[in-house]
Amino acid sequence: MPVLDQLVSAIRSAAIEVIDLTAKLDATTPVIQLPPPFANTVPFSLHEVSRYDDRGPAWYWNDITTGEHTGTHFDAPVHWITGRDREDVSAIPVTSLIAPAVVLDFSAEAAANPDFLLEPAHIRQWEAEHGPLPDQGWLLYRTGWDARSGSQRDFLNANETGPHTPGVSVECARWLSAEAPVIGIGVETVGTDAGTAHSFDPPFPCHAAMLGAGKYGLTQLQNLAALPPTGAVVVAGPLPIAGGSGSPARVLALVERP
Ligand code: MN
Picture 1 (cartoon, protein in one colour):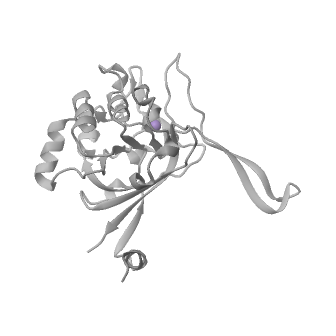
Picture 2 (cartoon, rainbow, N blue to C red; picture 1 turned 30 degrees about the vertical axis):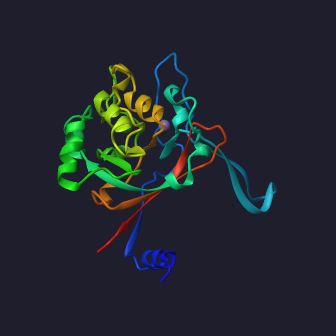
């Protein structure tokens, strides 16, 4: 049987399960809150154009307002100053949008310490058990943060010292960008950097290193708990916004069931 027929057949029989890693978009979808003097993005919103009424008797449709970095979304290299001469979101090769993925689960560590940082030693320890990170694939970093995504307050977890959410260390960001074979990192939090990363040296090291190296970010993922540590394939679909720095994305995972 041709391989695409096999794929369709396996999806229909649930031999390959399709898992939605995407958060629903609505007005309550958490968005990052930067302190003054920085500008902020707007919440997602719908604006009704017509709903089977005088404005359009047989049809319902909306305009939408959204930031590029709202909800489950894709960070293109040009998002960061280190990647300013690199790809915008419309230029991401489509072959990069279908890629293998591994899941590293640090939800217990993040539950104990919301400022938990992934270090190269954690990844080496994981590799000793599961094998190398996937070539041209995603490192999906599970922290359990998706359980908080129904509440902007819980999701951003900010106090008087700023937000407290898990991320990666400066050394780990450098290692992932320069040494690891991955095309990007996917996280459950509002961004790929830790909540406290504004105070790191350099600040926001994951954005700076990964996007500067032409790698990608996926954020606000859900349902990583349903994925195996290895063997999933991720299909990420950002909108091809010309010149865009990122885009809300539908992100699916294909998982082969025994
Ligand atoms: Mn982003």
